[in-house]
Length: 258
Ligand SMILES: C[S@@+](CC[C@H](N)C(=O)[O-])C[C@H]1O[C@@H](n2cnc3c(N)ncnc32)[C@H](O)[C@@H]1O
Image 1 (cartoon, rainbow, N blue to C red):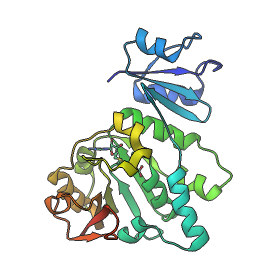
Image 2: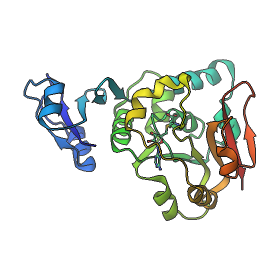
Image 3: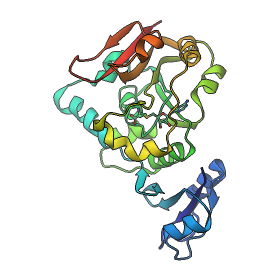
Image 4: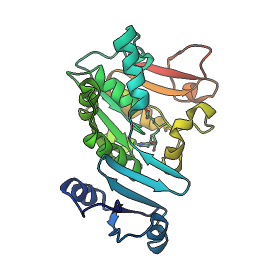
């Protein structure tokens, strides 16, 4: 999959953040020179083009556009702030304010942001194996500005790492995180997950490996949590001890207590 990066039509060359983005990602830079994105894509035989916009990078992919936005996380945290309704993920993970939370499937980062809000004294690390997703989300988070400081601070505390989770887990010490979390791509997507649809095109769709869960159980101190479809066989295949979630909801959490 080839992806190139460029500026907006009015962009004034490469600023220091964009330069850092290019250096760490090895994504080739193509000067915009007033060309359309379709032309840049065609001339460089690229499947996608990342445009460096002031508010963060935007990945243009034929028929879709992908950029970081915290909308779902904002709604979930606001429910707690306004109505005291604790998010199901936080409850299932039994997350405390100084916990260390490892999100092995960062995606758009909504779950990581919610976890970060509830762990102001701990840390959230997000792993993402798809380079375009990790770069768009990492830099979108870094450049994100909001008057809602509680949201901005939760977002900025997240550390994003572009890596494949199994190899990363293997390098970690025993019990180095309190909770290790997985939210893999469903093999049979639910219609309701349309918010993730641009992400689907560039995401890693590999199913979770049993060895990954074994590593996660070594790395986690309290529990390993997996979000999956309730009706499939993933929870039993991955040896979850408990399945938590409303019977009316198609999605549930599988938990391994340690
Ligand atoms: C369903 S999305 C996660 C959504 C996320 N929980 C959120 O709240 O936005 C799954 C993500 O995990 C990533 N992923 C899948 N397998 C992975 C692996 N082996 N290592 C790291 N990331 C992986 C995919 O590329 C995708 O972006």
